[in-house]
Each structure stands twice: as structure tokens, then as C-alpha cells.
Length: 485
Image 1 (cartoon, rainbow, N blue to C red):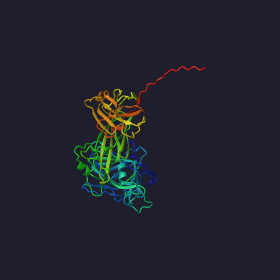
Image 2 (tube, one colour):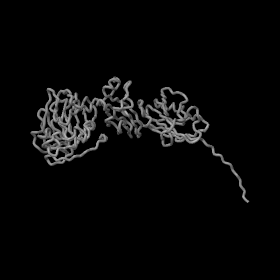
Image 3 (cartoon, one colour):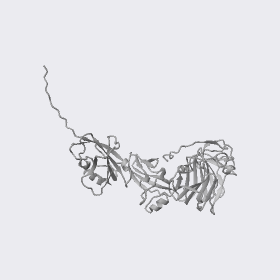
Image 4 (spheres, rainbow, N blue to C red):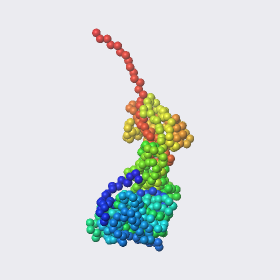
């Protein structure tokens, strides 16, 4: 994980029976592998309310208090739970119910640093009461096919809300002395149809109670709120605009960026669903690196992607419709290439010329290229305050190159080879056959972006150069002889 979704890590020290001070934090880090779903129940739900013929629940009420540094805790008919690495300094503590944990405000619960629940047989559901929770810790489900799923609770924390306003805040057991009123409480359900053999809980103080497992996947109940589906959408071709309207849908995208250049991407600008645009009630709620050599960050709906290394990385992102409460998750595949474009910084133009050829050497690197051109106000690339008076045009059409134009924007897209062929025909030209420049300098901005598909805002990133279009002036000098007597 590169970052923790910008969440503030709250640390609340609490004493347990052993006298050890622990910090309770929870994060599920999400790496999609199988068909899994996470949901949650309200703060008052402290044991599973799902039913199946194979459902088994275990608590810790009959166990001895203390830190199980080397012992294994047996959970009848479910399996055993023990420290994942007994030789390290992590802990597995059984404590009496207190202000931070213990379902119903009685009995006992566990607090752990890194422990694994090894199951006696393959299960497809696990639930547990998550008490005094915030971020970050990990829950890793080890699947029977040898793969793993690691879940991220950043989205869960967002769904539950912040203390002070959230119904999930505060220990629901009101009779507990010094009751915790500053952290989250919920019952968490994890379903996985592939099946899993063990579950690893790790972090700095992970409190839980009332573990339930089931061999069969239990049906949903109306009180569940789903926050994350592990089925990451990889195709939108079958989704209709009606489906998108009735059910929130996030669509995948492959993007190519240049090494060392931050590229901004807003998934909501291009739904890829025929006849559908995202309404203003839909927002990007989460993004996180799934794999690869890159990095990402998010500001509102805009995801910034960057890498200093050539390669491929993937980013998961989620969207939410505040009007319907629907959520969905998809994945961006980012291809990182090295693109080099050598552009002039000054172009001298005869004040009488209406067109001037652009001396741009061939572009190297990149498989597909989009060349974006626009007029700017100055050498720093400031926005133009009025209509453009110059633009880039081509003298002839190059096969395989697509030209498009808009308000003060002309783009050329195609393979690197075709774009390089097109470069030899490009000129800067005055709009409506006016001269290019006959007074103060004008400026154009050229952005060269590697791309694998059309991206709405690709002209805001890439390798770029602001070119000064400067009128050519010939200096005139006359020699004057002067005699003074």
C-alpha cells in the first residue's frame, strides 16, 4: 500500500488484562482475485444474524485471560487461532469485556497484533464483531486455490462515517464503565464463493469477538450494507444506459502515460456506456494501487497517476451514487512509456507570413501518440483570455492520423510512426488567413502524450513545451560622421 487513502490514523491506547498497552486499528487492503463481498451491520449487531445449515459461531468467554504468546486458541468446530509468527513480538491477548470490546458488554474478547485463524475445513463465509475500530490493519483471506484476498477498510471507514455524526460510533454496550465514544463498531461479513482455508488478522491492536463461519454462502439480509465488491469490473460492453441509471457502474480503462510526468484522470468524464453520462450525484470514493511500478493519489474525482519506471501498474477505484447509495469498483490499467519530444522554444516568423512550418524533430518512444496544440497567453502557459488567433494545421492528411479540433485546441492522434510522418506537414497559421504575428510575441503549447485509447483530459499532461512565436526584426544601422570644432 502506497498510502492510507488520506485517513487520519487515530491512536487510542487501551489497557487489557495483561497490562499491555495496545492500539486498535483496522484496514482491509483490497487486491481483487476472486468473487468476494464485504458488508456490515449496524453498531448494535454484535453477532451474525445470517443463517445457513453450516453456520458455526465461537466466542472467547471460556478462555483464560492473558497473552497467548506461544499457545494456540481452539475454537470448537471452527479451527485454531494463533500468532502468525510466534517468534516475533506480536501478541494475542484474551481480555475481559471493557470499554473497547466484548460483545454484549460481558464475557471476553481478543486483541491481536498478527494472528491467523486456521480452519478445520473450507469455508465460504466469515463474520466477526469489529470493535473500537479505525485504520489501519489487514485481513487476508487465504483461498483454497492458493491465491489470497487482502481487504482494505478505508472504504468501510468512509461508509461508517466519522465519530460525532456516525451511528456506528460509540460502544453500543452503554453499561460499560468509561465506555468508548470515539471509535467505530460494526459487525463485518466477508463472503467468498471460491472458499478459504485460513484468515490472517494483523496490525497494531485488532479487537474482535463472535467469529462465525459457514461452508455455504449465507443469503443476504435487508439490514446488510455492502461497501465493497471484490468482483472488479473489467468490461462495460454489455451495460446499457438503463442499467447504468438503475445500478451504479464503474468502467475499466487502459491509459498510457509518460515516465516522470504526472497524468490526471477523471473516470467520470468518460463512462464508456453508450448513451450515458455520469450524473453529478456520482463521485469517486476511493482509489488505490493494486499492483505494479507506479503511484497514485486522488483529489475529489481526479486520480493522479505517475511513475518514474517503464512498466505497467493497475489502480482500483470505486464510485458511489449518493442519490441511490449504489457503489461499484473497476480498475485502471496504466502503461508507462518513455516519450521524448524535442520542441523549439522560439520560432521566428516574418511579420507578413500567414503560415510558418514547424521544425519538430521525430518523436521517440511510445507506441501511440496524441499531439495536443493550443494557444496560450505567455511563456509560462497561462490561459488565453480571448479567442485564439493562431493554430496548428497540417498541409496534407497522413493515413492513420486522426485530427480533431475544438475551442482553441487541435489534436492529432495515431501511431508513433504515423505521427512522425504527420509532423513534417504541420505549420502554425493565423486564424482566418491573418498573419501569424506582426507585433508582440504569441505563444503556443504543444503536449505530446503516449496513449492507448482516447482519454478526455490527456491534453493536460504529457511531455510539453511552450513555444514563443516571435516576429522577425532586422536591425538597421547607419554610420554618421560628426565633426566638432
